[in-house]
Length: 142
Length: 380
Image 1 (cartoon, chains in turn purple, brown):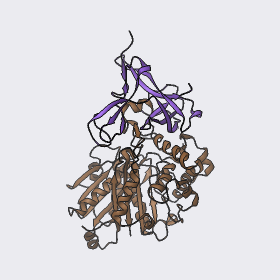
Image 2 (spheres, chains in turn orange, yellow; image 1 turned 90 degrees about the vertical axis):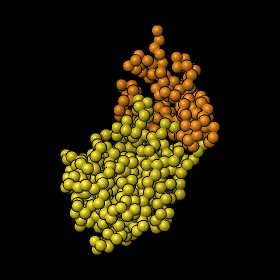
Image 3 (cartoon, helix red, strand yellow; image 1 turned 45 degrees about the horizontal axis):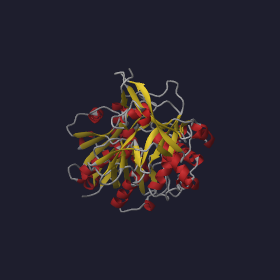
Image 4 (cartoon, chains in turn orange, blue; image 1 turned 60 degrees about the horizontal axis):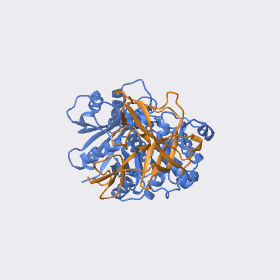
């Protein structure tokens, strides 16, 4: 039997986690100030209003800015044991929000303004034998 | 409400030492008391800025000076901890509660990248979103894209600051590097290189601050705190927070602009009235952005300002005469108070080869996690 799937953070993802093609980033749109925030929030991080529409953020985005992480990040980083430099960027979605995310594409190809697509994936299996679902962005051409 | 003055300063060098944090902090505090010609028993309240040290660090450090029953409070506001602590001392004096306070910043930090669990959520750490210079680097990349800022301009900031540190006995490195050495140093998070970032380390700085009435009674000529402010970043105004996302529709002023506006108004001055600056050069790009946010040049012109030479010692607007955090290192609780010590010595005319001739007004600035920003303006 397949493992149960859980999001890397509660409220960060929406859709059936055992069907990754149907998973999206979760967002919350404030009914007062109209700001869209990342995740399933109960209070608007801008104005503090407590009536928010929970929405799925778009899967397509553009790279607003990025860096290349050249050394293994400190702490409980769960990336490959054989560390390779990777891109980290702010990906603009729907013209309303820029999400910080690791980028799964060749570091030499990174360019501000390039189109990207959302890709959920199983990062690891946790201590309860559950598959932990995380996300990255890939080149649209892949 | 009278003004508040600094009448004594003390520093323990920034670097790495085989000493306890109690020894490092108490040494700076004792030097500040000596500089002010006062005794520990004269201190009516004390504030200890620190981020990495355990609870009750202020008590543990200052009890080395002798027994006391005064209020001693630890203050933490990330890289702005020293500014937040100094502000508390200023408020305590302005309230009339005390006439003489000690403000000390002390830190002892492990080598390498800062522990990400202190400021990031566990899921961000798992995905590697959590490496300290990465968010500064992303700002640099966007600035280069929008304004044509170059890697050479960023390296020039590191070149200037390392060069300035050669005569600063409190700096960790005190070593000049060539542009070639800086640009050949390894990339940490593109476009920022190893010789362009500051290291967490150990160190302490301390100030004795007094009311105007107390200063007259002491027969001292102090340095006036013309303005001090501390704030955190407004919603989505700074992705150093460290944020998991930013708004693409809201464009709030960043924490440095907000804090600077408050301080300039409180001091009744503009940036044109300030003779020298110590600013948060966590990395060399950061200093370029701060030129713009403090008002030294228009937005997008920071790269051209470093090219102009105006921010050199001897230039129109010297910045980081001490060598900045790039050469001194950043013992977080002590970093802003270390800036203030440098600026007090500049205003006293005691900085030797790195002296800004005729400096009368000086500004210290720090910025870090949580968008914590503190700015202090001093006047002689």
